[in-house]
Image (tube, rainbow, N blue to C red):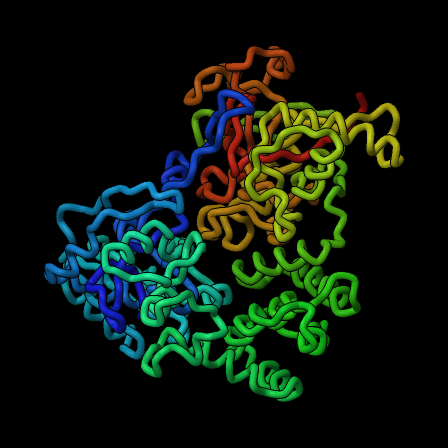
Length: 609
């Protein structure tokens, strides 16, 4: 079994095909946006996910990824059949879909006129398929390339595809890839990537009830289609470590599971020799095997010791991260290696993100409350990138220090636990996100934290008795992001890939701070483009589209802290879903002070009171 799923029948052994969901939601698409809450009692909106089929027609070029068994190939073949006139496939493709684990059922919105498709499956010549697609002239066409990870040079193939899309506007592109393999593949910015969630629980339950199945249902919100298909065949839920023995020999999606079983059967010495000799070949199965080994199992310590070496490949270190125990020598070796890898930069963005998660879980040893000094002076401000940021001019600032990083979850959680302040974050307490920026915070939340941390830092001697921690005013934030020369981006005048967590990075989420050292600002600050919108004290006005407190800057009361609740405050820097024209040191955003979102946070300024 392989991809996007819809019911073809109810008998064991037949592929059940139901709509796959993407990790991209309606809320993500809405202005990539910021939402306002009416009060602290308001509930966050539950996510409504787009289906894989809807995603294909949302972008000229798209890369969708999922683990093995995630339904990619079945979806690709179904989509190709539907576009090339197969009525059964077309009906399956366009059926209504449950959009979340809560059971919201909605029709799929697809174009009335669909393009033809050229399908390039596993083992097919991708260059020949690309040449065929280009030979079709100006015909509206979708080129579907499955199993990117199996190609001889995936990054080069992506570059050729991106160039073809630029040459031929009538050509569309869909590429599918295994998630772990994709982490190590560099991708052009013009081909955005999004993950696939799998099959929602209500979708599976409806199918099982309709077709008379019993015993296959489990309590997972989203489940890999391969595991669910196997559960239907066996009449019970299936654990990942059973797949190698239970899946049919012809099930291509189970190859990684079979390779993981082969590693499990080896001695520790043979396993370590095998994976270190060919990390690219074996890292997927090793990663899967490490998921199945309990941290307190006898084998875990031996493998952790062998894998957590300072000179190990980064992908191998990330596997070791699943086995090491806090407080051990292996954990200390691993965290030091990961800090070094993060500081060095250069790794593909996907590997950086996972390195950050492992680092956070094991106890990030970096000083994430580090401050950078900004000398007093007159700094460039504004620019021509958007009318709300114009005109370019200069504005004065005094001496201050500013956080090298945005305030992270671990720091904000200490504040919450000590003060009892409510926090709407759904995952801010997750250990693997401890070094992520704290989000889902109002302007009032951020200011309350600043007041709290002022007292703590004074008591610790970190700041003077005459200094306070507070939010930056817009002038200070921009001076720290752009420096005396007034760079457009913290690193220079031109956008550069893998310098920031923005739209093109494809995370569609925050990540551990400091993963993009190439994007360091002249001040030494990190994550000042993308990652999270950052609160400033500065007023914007009531109208989201046009600021009442426009540029050029002037001393006109725009720093008043007691303005009415409906006066928006400035946000700066863009977030993980922002394109380059927003993720920079010039663009101005705004939000009501009582508003919050999973993409807005803050960093601290320290200055004389």
